[in-house]
Length: 193
Image 1 (cartoon, one colour):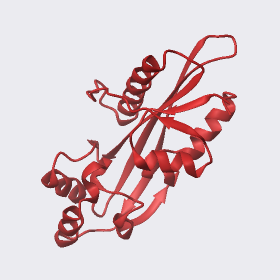
Image 2 (cartoon, rainbow, N blue to C red; image 1 turned 30 degrees about the vertical axis):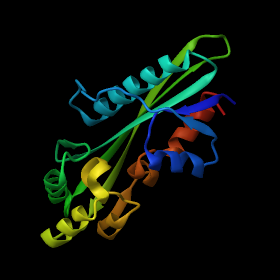
Image 3 (cartoon, rainbow, N blue to C red; image 1 turned 90 degrees about the vertical axis):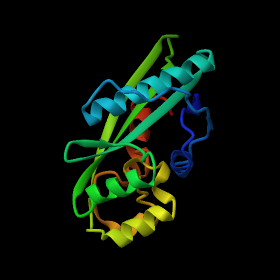
């Protein structure tokens, strides 16, 4: 098995990889996130590729497997990343309240294959999330608690926002930040584990 490098500082991604028993080191990317794409699936693929390539260059192209990810939320055609401030978090949660939205995570893996050739593979996972209606007081209380500030779409499904989740259609871990079931299957398919 190759040495795995997670190109992310996200504690949630770290926990999810640990949950499925993978050993890895963390090496976050320094890439500035300025996507040129506009479709949610293209944005997460583009950003995950940039992050993976940045970290791959730092590894010196050794016998590692670099895994990067980028997650966004999309509702009614609008892409929601991490909120800029509390006001932005309130706006985002207002958009999500009472509606279904999509959580997209793009993943890129880079490694050297058995013949010494560099390989790169990207994919994305989309999960639908339906939220109960949240009133203004609930939104304000949630935002003031600080939990939404570093989360795509301004909420943490595994945190206090669980009280507002009506249903999840697709891979739950994707909503947390890393679709580990699909990732594991892709790693198996590429003979990386």
